[in-house]
Image (tube, rainbow over all chains, first blue to last red; front, side, top):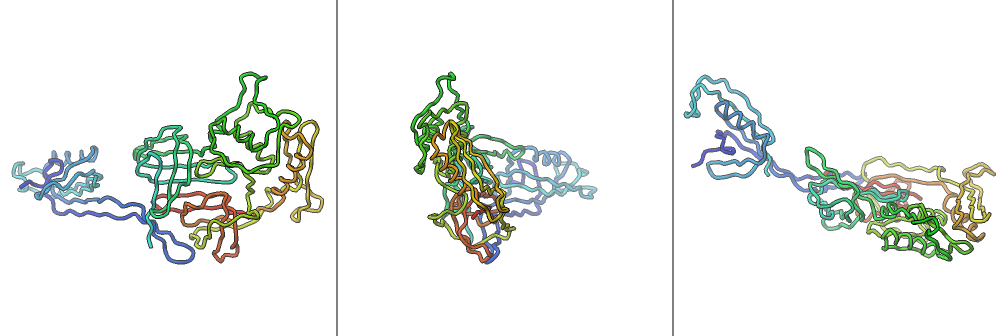
Length: 119
Length: 318
């Protein structure tokens, strides 16, 4: 089974949500009810919450905002291509990590919020 | 009930917004389209079809005059002008001073048609005038644009020259107010909650018209105005030497322009739901119980279609 990864960068997903919507102009006549005009729809915006370990991983993730499409892969398979709009990183107070056993136990642990646009 | 907005622009994909400005007083109609991408180049023909998925029509036909790509969105902005731009861009200059365009005994509508054809505008509709130029001396056209000369002719007759949304150039007896025989294209019953202005002014009022023609020919038409002191005249001169060469023609030009100009301008500005059938120079009926219901002349219309909706800003005149 494949682990969660974003363009091959290992992430530990704790939550994923998406948001979509229709663009509706609401015009209000002086008399009568509101008139709704549909102007297309928004493609989904995904918000991914996850843990990452190590500064190299953090840098790789942050570099995704400078490039084009990335591929999000879950244990269930490829979710799709996305454009990374924003990466918010927060360092967790940890002394010793056991999340990634391939890295040293004193590697820093971060929680990350990644906002991605379906492309 | 919701409506799905519709837009289709020649050779252009993913339209973001459309703005089309038509006005009786403007020389041409202008369209500005923002889109994700376009295959159009400067000078290409373009038509703009907007409205709703179940009710849309062409509101603009013309030529691309400007293309801009904005960063960082990579959004393309297309500015186009209606077909009359060809008449404005076509400047008549004879190869030698002695070989200029000359015509005898030519009807005004035929003269305008010939000049428009020079600029490649053959899609031409006209009303018959009673004016024949070049009876005693030739009409000579040189060192002027086709548009300027045709506009000069239409001003003498108090007529109107414009290109419609389909690209046809019209030379017709169209005054900027409701005329006898006009029929209403549409009844407006809903206004949007945006400021409505209604008023009257005498800024365009002229109650004395003087016409100068060839060889000392001149004519005058005047009338008292209830909006001016007794015996007070606001004058305007129609100077057409080389074109008007009979006394009858000079007097007719003076009379026609007096009818056009000796009146108050009553205007009403408002915004309504977008409707592609609203085209400048048509007559519509207002039925909104706001104290100015009735037939109005659509002096100008601006179609705005974007993610904020489709609306039409209108200036109406009576």
